[in-house]
Length: 463
Ligand code: HEM
Image (cartoon, rainbow, N blue to C red; front, side):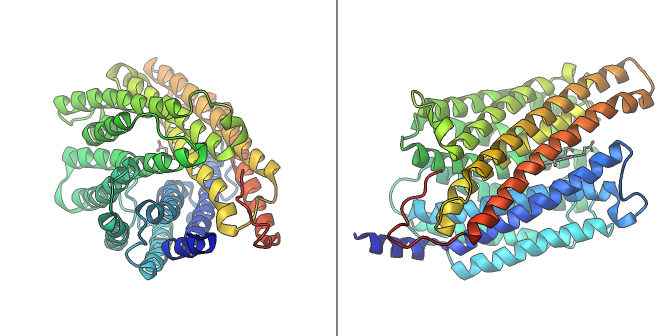
């Protein structure tokens, strides 16, 4: 096959424009979400610049912060990457490229309606399921269409099903079921501690059965391509997949330890959470085995560095989780800022880093030109990495101090007072992460404005 034929085939397979549009949407929501994070952070240090404006109530913007991250940034980022990876892996286009655009528009409608609904006071009273009840059916339909659009090429492909596709197929089915369970069951069917148990499962499965399989699936796709080496062990990759499938859905109740939910369920959740750490270890070992002897690649290849930094964070968060899930630890850290530190470490330190790595790799390919500035690419990485390291360490340490203070029955106000310097440091760390994002956006604009090289010069772009 000639190079022109190959390019033509790729064009038919992959709609590169939609990948770009998903990425633009993701970056827009990440920016909004970070600004919302600052609003809440300033409120906590009693310097809310928008005090007294109901529409800018920090409580509402806190929900916008988390929802814009989950459904705006992560979902859009992953959908863009899936549009790139699945047709390449299966050698089949998505079911219908027009459907992809319908989904794109509908999904942005879901995210904007969710934000608007929350700000107008229509939030559903469910953690992470705040999507107003009138948006839920549309989001559910959107998830069904996403599954149909991507499962069609997978069902049509010939040859072995790579582990990446195992993860993707599972994610499409699990996400659909998870969303239905979390948004409809506690709202309409069960109440009290049963609703709490379902809610806990929903929060956890959103991370474990939506974000995690898409994230790891994409790592299994991109890492071998970028490192030009196969994955170390196919057997271990299957252990990781089935371990996740078995243990993850058993953990939900660990969000509600020491509650009226029956103790045998709480113990079950604790044990399976610890078990998942072992599963995670197999996956991380497999990826480190894959670059064994070739570690210098993380110095020279920025996307690979983003990926492996995320993997180290993933291992650390799950290790942290194996301890924090024990009842002994819970006595101290429950309701403290430890949990917020943990949440940022996993959502930003892992999945956002992977998406940033994939964007850093894909944008030059989508825009057919090199990054305008490799220095800005490096600045993005370092400011994000330093920022998340400081933010997570700061909040995790603060959580311990808060827990000890509450356990000693000191007045609540005392903990709010000594938290102030830690919360100021969180803002500084957030500024570093936000600065990294601005460096990336500036680089993107400069790249978009740079001339497209002549076809003869358009050689493979390397970062
Ligand atoms: C500019 C940087 C950021 C700042 C200043 C910030 C600040 C905050 C604040 C103040 C909260 C509420 C904490 C509380 O209620 O006590 C929060 C919660 C949260 N943020 Fe951020 N955030 C930032 C970036 C991010 C990013 C990039 C992500 C994900 C990719 C993220 C994910 C979360 C999550 C998951 C929670 C919920 C934590 C929980 O309920 O335990 N944040 N953030």
